Length: 74
Image 1 (cartoon, rainbow, N blue to C red):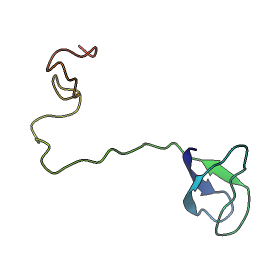
Image 2 (image 1 turned 30 degrees about the horizontal axis):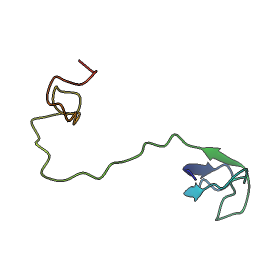
Image 3 (image 1 turned 135 degrees about the vertical axis):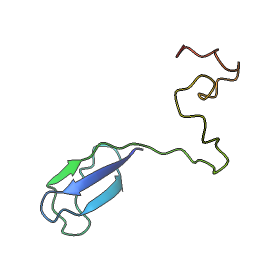
């Protein structure tokens, strides 16, 4: 079941909801169903040990187990 992010069209409350089946989203603050689904960018847990000299997209930073230069992004 996906978690969606919403902004209420009535009170501007931002919230996340776990949507089950064909259930409709409603604002937990004012209870209206006038909500707008937001673009969700998911996060992946990171560490502070990630080298600052390597930015995402550089060769070898995608994590391909075959090593640097092996991924299909090249």
